[in-house]
Image 1 (cartoon, helix red, strand yellow):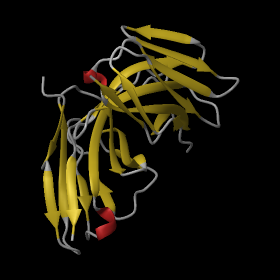
Image 2 (cartoon, each protein chain N blue to C red):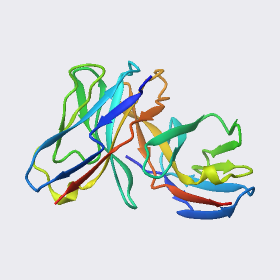
Image 3 (tube, helix red, strand yellow):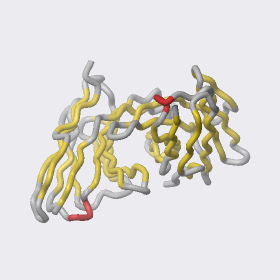
Image 4 (spheres, rainbow over the protein chains, first blue to last red):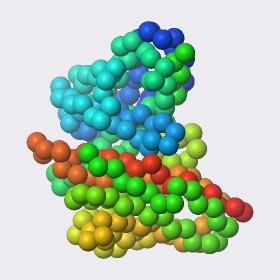
Length: 115
Length: 114
C-alpha cells in the first residue's frame, strides 16, 4: 500500500515559471488537502477537496490552482512562481466518518525553491 | 479558522524522562488530534481525542483535553531517542456543508538526548 505519493521530491524554479505538484493516493479517501509548511508558521491549508469535482480554498490559496477529476489525484498548480512560494508542500488525504474525525495521511512532501 | 498554540516551542530531555507538551485554542472544536513529524518527513497521526473525552491513552502516549480551559496536553512517558521529532496539535472544527477543517499549530520540537 503506497498511501499518499507526492512528486517531485525537490524542485527549483525561476520566478514566473509554472509547474504542477502531483499528489496521488490509493486509499480511496474522499478528502484531499494541500498544505505549505514554512519555518515558524506550522502548516497552512492552501486548497482542499471533499470529493471528485469539488474543491475549495483554504487559508492561503492565492497563486495556486487545484482540480480533482478523480478520487485518486489532486494536483496543485503554481501559475507564476514567486520567491514567496518557496516552501515545503504537503499533500494529505483522509476519510470522514461523518462526525468530523478526519485523520489525515500525509505524503513525504515536495521541497520547492523559487529563485 | 483558529490555530492551536503549542507550548513549549522546544523541549530537550534525557532518555527515560517524560515529555509533556501543551496545546491551547480559542473556539469550540469537534476533536483534537496530535501528529508527529520526523525531520524531513511528512506528518504522522498519533492520537485523536473527541470533545466529550477527557483522557486517552495509546502505548506510551497520554492525551488529556480540558474543554473548559480550551487546552490539551500530550505526555510521552519513558522517552527514547527515537521520539526526537516535532509534535503538532490539530483542531477539527465544523466548516459548513457537512465538512470539517483541520488546522495545525506551529509545533513543539522535542529532542531526546541518549
